[in-house]
Amino acid sequence: MEQRKKKSEDLRSYRWYGAKDLRSFGHRSRTAQMGYDASDYVGKPVIAIVNTWSDINPCHTHFKERVEDVKRGVWQAGGFPLEMPAMTLSEPFQKPTTMLYRNFLAMEVEELLRSYPFDGCVLMGGCDKTTPGLLMGALSMDLPAIFLPAGPMLRGNWNGVTLGSGTDTWKYWADLRAGKISEKEWNGIETGIARSPGHCMTMGTASTMTSAAEALGFTLPGFASIPAVDSRHAQQSSLTGKRIVEMVWEDQKPSDFITVKSFDNAITAVLALSGSTNSLVHLVAVARRAGIPLTIDRFDELAHCTPVLGNIQPTGQFLMEDFYYAGGLRALLAELGDLIDGSQMTVNGCALGDNICGAKILNEEVIRCRSNPLVARDGLAVLHGNLAPDGAVIKPPSMETRLLQHKGPAIVFRDYNHMASRIDDPALQVTADSVIVLQNAGPIGAPGMPEWGQLPIPKKLLEAGVRDMVRISDARMSGTSYGACVLHVAPDSL
Amino acid sequence: MRAPRRTGFLVGGPLAFVRDGDLIALDVPGRTIDVLITDEEMSRRKAVWTAPAPKFERGYGVLNQLHVTQANKGCDFDFLEEPMGAATGSKIPEIH
View 1: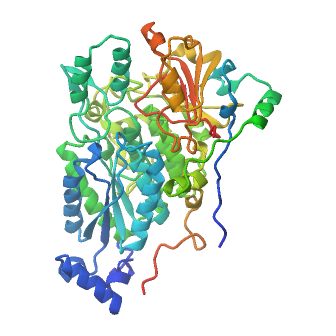
View 2 (view 1 turned 90 degrees about the horizontal axis):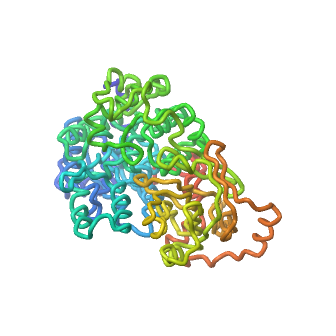
């Protein structure tokens, strides 16, 4: 541990517990009411464990156990842990989209940390928007903060076939609509595609954002790649609890380690993983909370020189469990070499370069070497034009290359219901060269910019074997999705 | 203290003015996305465009409607973007 920069009297919580007045009597007597003796908390850092567990969030089912692991660590390091439930953002269930509520969670985190006697916090999240929501709130308050990533679920399995979250849903749904698999087979996939706690195990938004959080310096090294049910996930949770207590004494706040360059590291990691397009919206929002004027064009600049090394679905072939066994994010960052600024500091008090030093790629198919990348560059591309004066994004590695330069007539749907009612109409004047346009699906229009951006391909074209078309909207797209989808068109169409 | 900004709804981006049959050109290597109509035609369409009615009249939906920023700015609420400082908020509440 670094030398303590703070004394007990300097702790923020001391104002609640340490004063000798009527209010502090109330705080102490009510803490006693919860079964704690003064020796449990007097003079100790009070740690908020912000837990986005909920009965309706399948990605966080293990958080009920993990919060106990964190508490064990906090107690052992001489802190006083208090679990603080915060709104969960359950990607599969929350409508119209979790994105509408990301800012709600961010506000809740900020106000929880402001209004209660906390000296530091552990942020427990992982399901897509929970990660940016937690980071945004914590950055605004700027108390010592450490992120606990939920970890991916195990590989899906059905009849011996490996299944990837989301990505294989879209694939087999297209096959079902094209008559290539039966209803019975579809039902079998339903029970096997998500078979353990943890978030999507493809390189969807969850894995993208937890990996970005690690590259930013917000997690213990290597944590974001560990599957949720692996015992090493519990071990890291306990260590996270220990570390936050040290961070309070060292007064290590996000503003002490978050920089323009740490955001470049996070973006480079996302690009090398061929991560979710959602990362643009989230990382820009997180950066701006830290006073860093990140723009989406920075993603395009870094994409020019960043190879895709993570061979993970939907761009690649493997899943997060394979990625972990192949060395995980530490090995990938180490392989990126000079593309990563190793001098940036992280929550464990060490520089990122020290944390990834010596990490080796253990399977060169899953994590490619720079000499043999999956895609040489341009994992994401930012577009401008008279349709998107403020920008739009596309994911070139996940689209058919014949569409990289394409001209075609628009078929316009004014909203989602309009599209849903017409897309499979046999009379719809559409060919494989048409460009499908969806309006009113943006941050205001939808509202919440739902993940509708992988617009459906008309059934008659699916049956004819078409699997990709140019599609344009002001919506987002699930990180597990793929195709020639122009997304995030700004300003939005409403 | 300054008044909170209103990002405002009813943005009316150009995507709203695309019509069936318009030619659209995507050029990923060139980083462009355009609808092949003239600026004059775009302006004409904008002039006759009527914004849909706001979807929310109360609650959190209104907060989002009034304050969410566009995708290129991260879709945060405009009044939360500022880093906290003396004028924009306090890290420690008063205890009385």
